[in-house]
Length: 496
Image 1 (tube, rainbow, N blue to C red):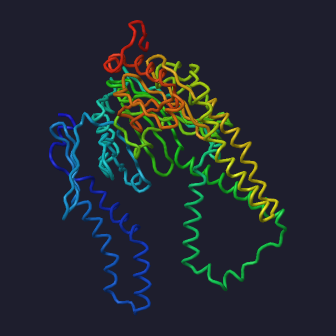
Image 2: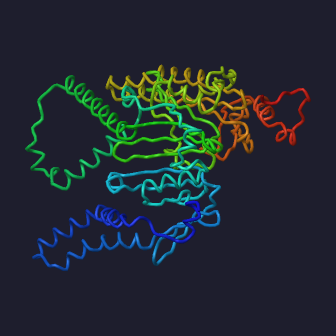
Image 3: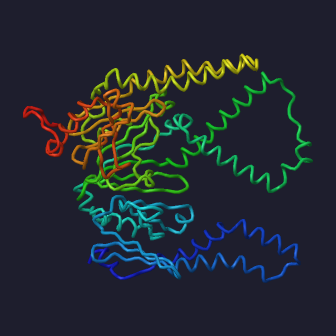
């Protein structure tokens, strides 16, 4: 009897969650508990106020008792709630990804959370089913069965179809961490938490602020020192966040049964993600400006049915050397052509649009700075004139980045400058075409060709492509679809 058949009856999660849920609820209610304890001390210590501690514990126990799941008749069902019963149900064949996420307390107890990506287009958390938590061995068996792979303990299958490691974490990759925006996000969160803590202890009261002595330095020295300190702080936070998220990173390919990609990463909270190769529609190679200058990039998968809220499940390579990212992309696509092939330029009209959209705002800023300088007088306002050459460099880079290709059965679209992205989508996963054109695009004879798909952001856009070229791309990719609406010569080739 298979494990899935064994789960046909409703069952609760592992009993060890009776320790996890109350602790979570206590942490969630911690601010309220602190207020209650302070009030209890000030009010003479009435024992009835200890109910405030028992309430979150009871809530955690109730959460465990009212949550159950089953896998029966080809469906996965999860029900939770007492007064308001909530049931999530999806067919097994709609499973897109299976993530195993283990927080520190889960790892101590030998548990994990099984997050099943269903590809359901919905709001809130209904695009996935979370089984929190299951024993680690049972979770891995369930993942293998849901994705129709060989059982984890099947030695013969492992010998016949071994796991092939594609790439592993290299400590040298941490040099790319300060070149991403994660440091700013982490620093903002840390400063927000620090300010709340200082506010709670009364640091911002007037008498405390008056007692703080700042070093007496000139602005010419103080400003560079503050800027340098900020850069160092952001870099350290970025490196810390990168290590915590990606430590132990390992991407491998399993060839037993249905081919799958297996990814493991995380220091404090470990995460295992498995992607079915049949549902992998392409890749997204992203190059933020900082990474690009350091010859780095990152890679994510375009997976059918995976919503934007599950973007973390599609990460194939974190910020790493571009050579590593391109090698992994070639492995995933089984060809290097979509990554290395030269792109078709969109012509001078598309280039003019990039120059106009980049330089016009900069020109307005420059004019405003000049007018302010003439009316008010501070010379430092002329610093705003730097926006003009910066906008020129931005426009030039955007023109160079813009392009497309249709090679080896893949549609390739590249655009952007501050964040340059090269999206590669397999033509067989295109379910429709959308031609969009604003008033300005129509005046220039351009359009945005949108290849709709069930993967990633549900679309891959080819920006500002000439009208006739947009139609030609759509026809070469899917001749039977486009020929219903337009007449084409018989000698127009389809995509190889």
